[in-house]
Length: 139
Figure (cartoon, rainbow, N blue to C red):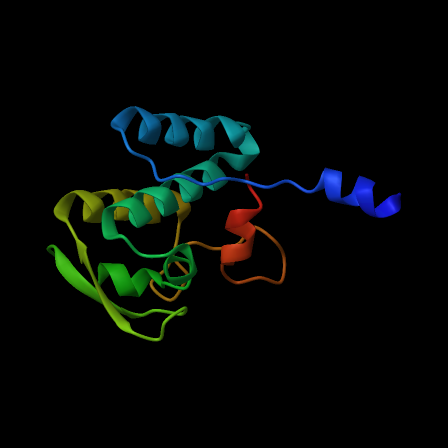
């Protein structure tokens, strides 16, 4: 009997890719609303930037959260970012456009980050950067 109740409480998600601009806009809006208090304005900006960065580069969250500010600000114009993927161990190229670079510069300034800081810092004490497992828990 206990096994049945435990199994019934499990949440199973059927995940589909975002297929339209409307779906992308709805998700961005949900990220803003989820963190809408004044205290979490930085969290909302961080989460939206992670989403936009992943959408524009095609990188996995586990690779994005390990980036440092210096990784994305080292050049003045658009450039290729080479990353060793955590999951596969392969080297992946991600193109950072002028549009994304502009958003990143504004985000870094808003967050008050230094070159040696992680691009997506954790808000929890004792953690330097946001882990991919923290990203998954916000569903």
